[in-house]
Length: 347
Image (tube, rainbow, N blue to C red):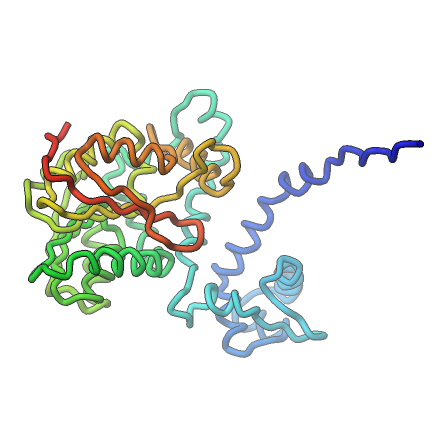
């Protein structure tokens, strides 16, 4: 019997991946023009949207057609409307607005153009964690990440606060606070929480303080300005420490030192919460975390993404126990750990 011919090898995947950059530019441009917000306000024709955004009608029409093809906009004849997902995450009218993430993507694009150079040298075109930057890079985008991180922060807070029911007051250190979301969500959920927000002075002054006021928790927030690698966190001072998307920028060496310093700062039985992008254990299938690892090559001197197994080993080595994943759907992974009875000295 004649065997069926095998399907020919196709270059289609290569074509799509090579042209994928266009999707990023289309989406970030639509956000920069506030196109999704104008659509949410009921402006559904090309003429209306061109007028409200101050753009050319041909440009708006072609952009809208592409957004339809990408699934972000729906059309009925000459009328355009948002999908439910776009209304939820891409309109400024939504409390879950994701525009900050898109602004960050636009911010990092120049260094990605030098990826070949970074792979050859192993060094980033721009080290955003270096002393030279002093938080300048982060001060321009972290406020926009509050909405993106709100729900994972809420999930982490609910689990952690549930484990601290017997505490009369909860002292929380938010390391690399940025928008403050990881500590401020704890404070909004529980009046016992007092937050110490640690970050570069430029970030605290331009972002963190403003968001604390906006979220109504400023009376329960104190500030610790400086470089997280150099500051002394103290000893036996905190019930909770949060590391929200910090370790991927620090890399293995600095993260392991950080864990030892955090363990020293935590009271006995204190809790550590980590949020980050975690690749699968074989580093072969979890696409977004693995792509984010390349982003660390482009923007940091030592950064990378790490598996849960690596985190568990390093945390146990630093004096933590009960290292577990906190259930949360999506690409952001949450890890919780408890300070063991015997603290290890900081490296």
